[in-house]
Structures are given as C-alpha cells and as structure tokens.
Length: 255
Length: 201
Image 1: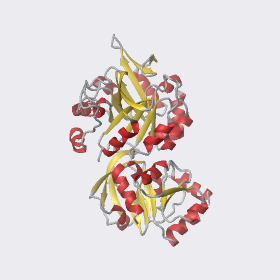
Image 2 (image 1 turned 30 degrees about the horizontal axis):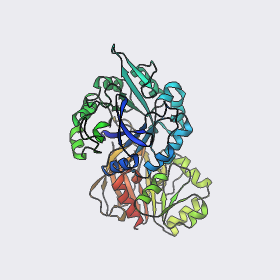
Image 3 (image 1 turned 120 degrees about the vertical axis):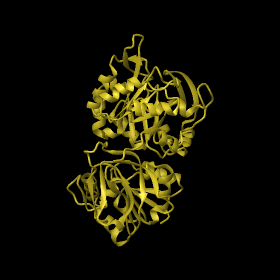
C-alpha cells in the first residue's frame, strides 16, 4: 500500500489584477503580478496552485476569465479557482479554460443546491467547498461568507457534513482568526472537521513553518495544506519573496 | 504539427497550452477532414469509457482513427481516458475499445483504505526503453486523476509502471502508438519533457 504524499498548495489571493496577501481577511498587502508569480511557482514545481478572488462575491463580480486564461497558459500544474462563482455554467467555463477545480463558498451558503448542481455536472473531484470559520468572543465558531463579512450562522462541523452530502469533493477549511498570522493552523478546528467527514480537508490559515504543515497533516489529519504568507514573504513582516519548500524537505517532514 | 483531437471529452486547452509553452506547433482537430490530414495525434479524454467510444463512433471517426494508427502508422499519444481507449475494453463500460494494444482496463482496488480516484502526484518508473521515456530517470513524478487503470497482456508493451494499491501500467507503447495514464500537461517539466519527446518522434 502506498499513500500519496499530502499535497502542499500555495493559495494566492487575487485582488483585481494583482496578487495580495491579507491578515485575518483584512490588511491587504501587494504581492505581485499574478501571471509572473505563477510562472515562478510553476518553476518551483508546486503540487497544485489555488487562486482565490477574495472580494468577487462581496463586490458581486463574476470571475475574471481573461486573467484565468492568462494564468492557465503559464502554469502546468493542477489549478483551482474560487471567487464569484454562482452558477454551473461559470464553473464549467473555468474548467474549460484549463483549471481542474472550482472553489465555492458564499454562493453555496446562500443557495445550497448550487453544490449538488455543480458536482453533478463536473464531478465531485472538481469541486472544492471553502469554509471560512471565525471564532467569536465566547469561542463560538461560525462559517462566514463574503470575505468574512457575513455570518451565515452555520456551525463548521454541521456545514462540512452537509456540503459532503451534497457532493463536495474537498473542503478548504480556513481559520479567519489565524489567516496571515504565521501562528500555525487551528489544529483543533481541523481535527474536528476531519473527524466528521470522509472527503479530503485542506487546512488553511496560519502556516508559518514546515512543522505547522506536518502538524496539520499528522496531528490533525488534514489531507493537504494551503499556504499563503509562507510562500510569498521572506518571513513575518518582511519583504515579498516567492518561495516553496524543497521536495526533499517536504518528503522528510510528511513521511 | 501535432493535432489534438477534440471529440467533446474534456478540456484540451491545457494540452495545446503546454505545446505552445515548449515551442511545439499544435492545433485542435475537431472534424473528420482535419483528422484525415493529421500527421501526429494526441488523443486526450476525461470522463466515462462508453461515452468516449460513442462520441468517436457518432462523429464518424472510428474508421479513420484505425486507419491512422494501423495503416498509416502515424505517432499517436493517448492521455488518461485516451490511453484507456487504446486497449480492448474497460470494466467501466460495455463497449469495445480501439484495441490497438493488447491490454485491459480494470477498476483500482477499493477495499484497502486508499482514496479513489487516485488523485495527486505519484511516481512512474520507467520499465522499458522507449523514445517517449528517453532521458527520464528511473522514477519520475507525474499528476494522476483516475479510478480505472490499464493492465497490459504483454510486459513488453509497458513503458511506465505505477503503484497505487496495485501495480498498473501507467505508460504503454506498441510501435508508434503510445498511452500515458497521468496528465503530462499538468506535470510541469516532466510532462513537458515527455511531450517534447513525442514531438521529436
């Protein structure tokens, strides 16, 4: 029996035609030009690349298809895209451009049938449902939409089980409280959701070093991790540097 | 010039994008007359086996494909489902495959705790000298997404092997007919190298 090495996925945030990095879904910092940055990631041989247009739903925008087309001519690794996808046709169009997977969050929270509609058409292996979780003052956790601005009132474990039953192929689980903080993943949250579903869970939000990655996988049971700050900055509060851990380093940490 | 067959089974943009990236001329071939003039052909495919074979038959391409492969003997590369179509047939469906290489397609084992589909980067080991694997080291990482796999009758027709619960043939060849289970167009420099080898045939 041979299990595949868990995937390590740079998650890149689109803001208009630029890439940015946020902290706790705010405090935008310019990172670079998308096509140029993904050309570098292509050379670094990342496992997959994920692009999220973080304000698309909030600003009621459709995906920027021409930008996605440009990305797909520069990147020859599996690609996923999320942001502003509100229909099956849009999801299909993203795939047609050369992406492997689409990511939905806000639109699914508003219209749960969208999950099964997309999944039935393009297959669950091509559908990731993003769950953005914020922990409130009293420790209560809720799933949020519209770049964290809207509280859906849904509880993460319950929502994760529901999206699985509707045909989601993977869950991108983001801790808003940890996002961009370099403090490590919210292992408690990851453990809880992983234990409640059988589909792969991608841990996201807070990674600052290799041991954070191995903790998410080995301790919390995530199938993959998504990295933001760690792969676009030199270090916390330092300049932009597009980077990715060496294959051997990952192999060793995740074996 | 490489023709990439578009018969309505999945996205072919990534394949033509990669040919462009490595500086190889390619064009989409979506009708019988352009298939008839093809000098080198990529047969892609994502989806169900019977659906793909029906598409080929409905588009009236079956006879021409057989002629290209077996009489003209132009180089042909099947990718993913396209590779599976080159075999006798698949457990996934009832229809006959193209039958260009003696092999069959069976479901990957489900009961041993491995997730199906087999999705992600895995190792393909070269097991036979071939123009397609020229310059590859013994083990290379490629990106896979599939639930069914190819098993060759004759080990001489296997050029790559991969293990996922079971050892299967991830690359096959007979004469100028080739097939790979993984997605070279999504496997950055390794995939680029393989497609360049195909272009150089």
